[in-house]
Image: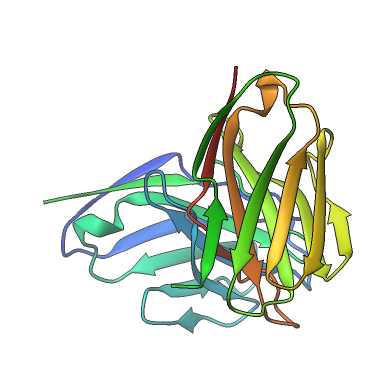
Length: 107
Length: 114
């Protein structure tokens, strides 16, 4: 599995877009990029994944650079309930969870 | 929410005793996983299953065994619990044949070994 690098923490104002970056420069051609989040003491929650193309669902958008070495998760209108640890993963056989980014959404 | 339950939700046990944690799903998904989560280590894969009676080891499998005799249940056993196995244990399931990494997690079991 490719190693991913994320900032340890980020802040966002409620109602604004939250843009969470992830670096995965060693990703191989068949490895997907996945995003999960974990709200305090709950199990992780799947958000979105992609291979090459940008993806959007009801929760978020995923922007993957053309060289696939980095990606950005976008929460278009962050709410207080989006405060969580966000994990970026890249893999094919099994997923490896790193330490993620603690996103704090404030009023 | 995916139909995943874990039991027990909390357990305190003594060193050296056997412990079995149960993960039950109502989604008929093929893949099931056990993870542990500890401060400073994030989530780490213990074992996983890709079908009834088909299991494999993950990153931190020493001291753990698993069994899956039917699709809906995946059991994690600590044969002789140690204090280093104090952790929060999460079960996850996945059903996509071509995309098994879209995983759905249970609520977790907090295990304390004294």
